[in-house]
Amino acid sequence: MKSIEELTKAQNDLIDEIQAFAESNNLVSEKVCPIYDGVADIEAYVRSSHKIMWILKEGYDDFDEKGNPIGGGWYMWDLWDKPDAWKQRSQVGMSYVLYGFRNNLTWGELPAISRCRTMVNELKSIAYININKMPGQRKTTPARAQAKYNLWKNIINKQIETYDPEVIIFGGTMRFFDIDKEKLTHITTISPDELPIEIYKLNNRWLISAVHPQLYSEVFVDGLIDALKITANK
Image (cartoon, one colour):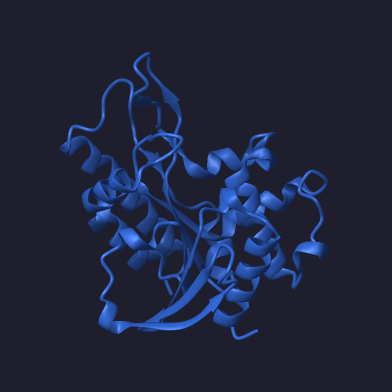
């Protein structure tokens, strides 16, 4: 694993690469810039006992009069310091899972995020990336997500290599990835009848396929906590 200094430099290089790629593909204008992703608190990530990456489809910012995405020029983790961060369903779902896993709690034992708003800070010590690095739509079609993965996959692969997570949680995104199925080992299924969570092993890395965290529920949260315990051998 890279040191704090090495990972900080590598992340800065990745952010520059995202910007350069967007510019070279004419994705940047006066109204549109990338939304940068990665690790908010690199020191916390490096020192974490179980390094987790969560991959979603795309972030969004604003829209022009025709409904086209505009905005960007900020970091995903800028959202987590806003006063209403605890109200965003995707962030809440991920925060419940991470807080429960790290504190050995189940859904019924978790404090309500409205009373423990700093729970959102759990996101700062994981790697959080989107398939699409540009501002997108509030809802993304599978065809759009696939096209964005095909466009950005070299940078996405470099992010995975750089952050070197022990486990990747795909929030409805695993199907878009080029994964060598011959090397993929299915370990188990959790909650097969409702919002199934599939656990795989690819070489020395765990892969967890789940639904988008905005669909969180007791089944989702406890299922992912159990999945993370399996990957951490807890």
